[in-house]
Length: 567
Image (spheres, rainbow, N blue to C red):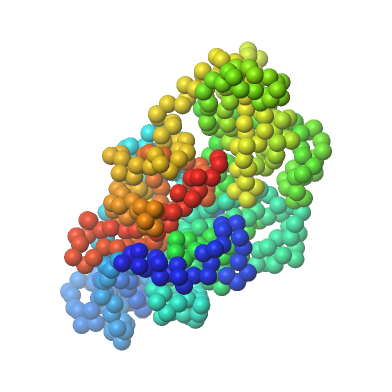
């Protein structure tokens, strides 16, 4: 039934031929503790609040009575609902998990639905982000994974959609709300974050493309059933940094409004929205580049691993576009600094021409090659790469003087994507000692959990493998849940679905799926940045025990399509 649903949606979609980079015309500082990622009790529902329960909420009866004063509020809420036709809990395959709010205050609505949830009573497996510790996920193998998870928390957002498009199909789960402003809540995940744009008009709703103003753009990925098109996107509030209840009161939570739905695909249940901000601190916080140790102004990093390198770029290409943050230096040799990360290291090559700048590809000489990943705004093209020094082992200011630091000149840009702000450099060395030291980094700890490359090494059923979801269940602050994979669809048979036991609730739709220690698909910057899977819904049945609930994602094909891309 799940596949029939996906096929039906695909046949009705007019957008499947579009790519992630195509635009449709109509169609976020609180730091997370290192050892713990307190949530206050949900705001109690008042007697005057009118609330419509979700499919998984216990609806209070209009005739119920209790001597307990704590139940009086819910009795009156039930009376307010007595004129409506109750929705019975449904655990049918393909049921999406947006949370539909009633007409009461948002906080009261959310609190009531949280307290009366029938799918996960008590929410014992939903861990507030600030309470998340290593004991909840003991199989994380390295500090980089923990750092990526903390960053993923910052990049997870709550979506409040205040409009349902009349363009939704009759069989759409939310077709009954077409043309209304009924509030529904889901979850999203920040993908690409652009560099500062200074010389081009700002597309935000306030500037409307008519004002040239410093701005940053970023995209938010969610499920297509959460945000259907640009019409709905422009009526959506994107809440960043809603980590606990106090975030709303003290101003740490930031809300932005998308400009458009940049790309969507109903078969894969994916929608990507374009957002704009003028807040530099916000842009820096959500930028993936902050994950790497920062060699700011060429200084040594405050923390470092051997794979982190300093980049000294001695040329700015004339091909850099206007509006680029270094466009004013085009055609000059003003040195700017950046940071990179060592990735693939090759075996020794002795009978092939060496591509280094000294040999120029004309001399067959023993050499080793390796790649360095950085941001596209640091090294824009091969012209700049050939003027870039890659400084390895610069862990202390003394290392530059005592020759412990090793410098290698980059050869060329192997791959770059300005939209996602990623660039991969090729480097070569004749220093066997250096090459062997770099090769020591490539051990099982790193190669299987930090540098995945091919889809044919996926093992979602690995004993230590877990699927982690960060979401806003019932519109509440962020919660983390952990579970195991149940079924990994066979793409060769057009099975787009991934099923798992990770707990979810209404409001979790569109939440990011993070694969931990599933060989070849761990927390990897490229996966987190633009290849993330999103939660679609639940496919449990009424007869299934709650502890055995099965949830699903129908965008599995993303991993296979992207993994074949050169990187």
